[in-house]
Image 1 (tube, rainbow, N blue to C red):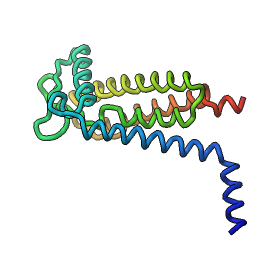
Image 2 (image 1 turned 180 degrees about the vertical axis):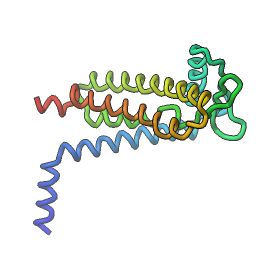
Image 3 (image 1 turned 120 degrees about the vertical axis):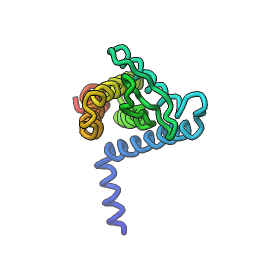
Length: 190
């Protein structure tokens, strides 16, 4: 038993930074996810349906579509907790809670904090990255709506392959930029 505990201790010492990353990432991810779940559980859907953030994303997508010359409107779905996105009187998509980019931002911020650099730099990068993810997500919804308006038979590949690849690919690039440029990991390797 003594040999096992010594071996385990040596492993923890050897991989201390990996263990710290995993524990920090999981802790931040769990706390932010629980806070978001709490927000969803107690959000008042009577004024902003289904919740404020999803409603705002749908309305901002509507505005962007209008800017791009596609007369559109976002309205509450009568049968489910989502917003219907209508382009030129054609129902093309629904904006659900999972479309509002909050879960992707939680994942992004958890990673950035787990690979933290200087406090101010970490905070500013997490904030700037979150805004970039939010904006790219809005553009993703708009382009998806336009694509579904013109090519509804491509729904499956647009929604399940191309657009997730865009948002998660961008998050991955933001992570790699952070690790290579600002994180403590990079600073200790220099």
